[in-house]
Image (cartoon, rainbow, N blue to C red; front, top):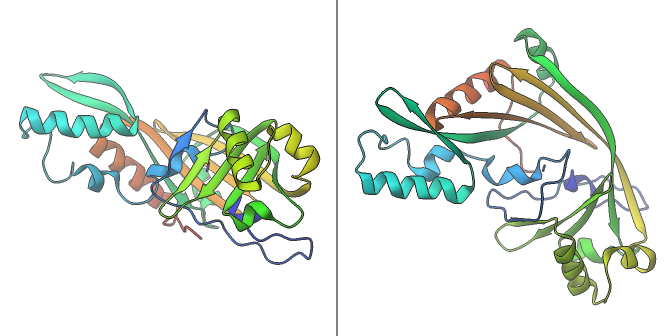
Length: 251
């Protein structure tokens, strides 16, 4: 998220910020942070249909064993909401999301398609580190949005998002070699604060929610819907084309 990238190399000497590497495979612990789309990024890049092989064999033609296996894979991602009956055929309704990079043409396009504005909110984004950037050197970003906190930790193959207070404390103590909770560390160790402007704008269009997030110089647009896998993907990508959205740039 749903940004951390802008704080990666920010220093008191004001060097150009770099974007934190984003990973397609991302683990998330704790509750979702409001106003941040990070928790959705684990399925944003690429096509979910490829991962589940749903474009190769339809559920209607597959054997029951194949259906169960695919459904289990979908459930593993945590998106299954309900079973909807369509005549004699059962369709699985799932939560589908794709995140794209913003383009200058988007702001006009979202009005041209007749999207209805649902919400608009500005906020501050803060990143905390030691004076010598100990967290950054270990691939860790400590992020605050309003009164909510998260850690992003870069590992060999993924970016892990941590929002559980207990796990945040544990990770910070491990990296810094300290003992204490986040509030203690903010007084004694995490005294370097970097600030960015953040904003979220939301629209609705034909059962698809549109969310533009800006943090610093990074802007993304996320499209969400609840539908059957293939139909939902078709609708999302069709709208993305109308909105002049671009493939998500990870850096």
